[in-house]
Image 1 (cartoon, rainbow, N blue to C red):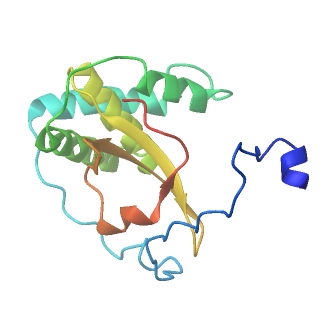
Image 2: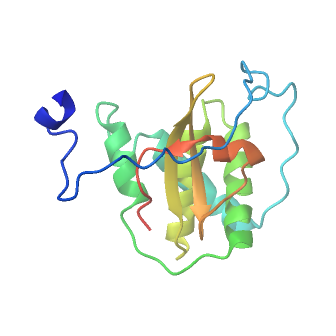
Length: 172
């Protein structure tokens, strides 16, 4: 009743039993070992076009969405979702993600999943393609991750991406 009083739950017209919880995807505890490989995997080559767009997009993201650090998160999200574009082929998105990841390894800065996903999404949009920038959390242990989806499929991600629950719906 406290949740109803706080406005978190709304009582419906036809009160009844609650539906059972939707079964989740089982996840085995990793304690960081699954998420911290001992060596970096080689990244497939991409075309020069994607290296150029990926480099510019990554620099835009690393500069805090073209502004100061105070609201870099908000500006970067706005930059990711600012443009409209046509549908994207998964292979095209994969090539863009590989280019951004390879450029990120060359920079003497921190380039993690948030920066890679944002830069990949921006590079795809600048080239006239649509993608969904996603970010979410997984449990046991708690970890955060950002990724790009095209047509409901994660781009350049491992199979454990299903462990993550997105924070919000994509802005496609």
